Length: 208
Image 1 (tube, helix red, strand yellow):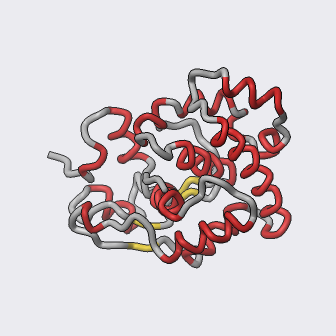
Image 2 (cartoon, one colour):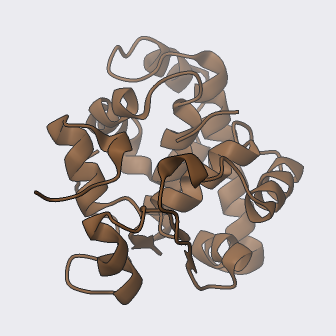
Image 3 (cartoon, one colour):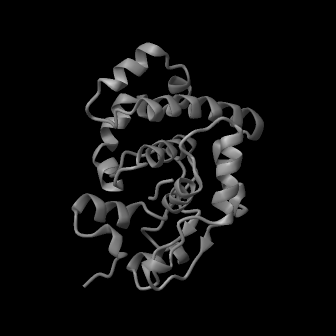
């Protein structure tokens, strides 16, 4: 029987996310922004709830096009608040717009969001070796610093635990437990581990 991290349970959507995405390196700006938005939207909710709404988010938010979202105004906020396919929380919606504008500022300074975010692990994924999920931390010094820096730039819903969940999702850290079949695949870069350099249609944490 295939051994997986126990957190993904048996829901097909959750299992597919675990097998295909969680811990895989992401270097595409739009995809990175998507994960920032979704991890923030998760606050107070389950990640499975967000995965089930993921396609609705893509449809409602212009496929996470940063430039378009940064230009959203009151009419867009009303539209999103009326959309039952996403989390209809005004603070989270307004944070998404504010964060998109923050990404544009980061790009002006660093060239890409990818370059800015991957600095926190010096461009190389942290390979952990947890044997039990209870050992996996909720946050680290790196996520603390990422959260501090993003907040200083006006980002919201970027607490340290949200940032660490983001880091896990986009492959900045390998937090699969060591007996999970994905642990060594990702650690060795074997087929299926992959690196996502561009936004792809796909399936699909922690909160502060």
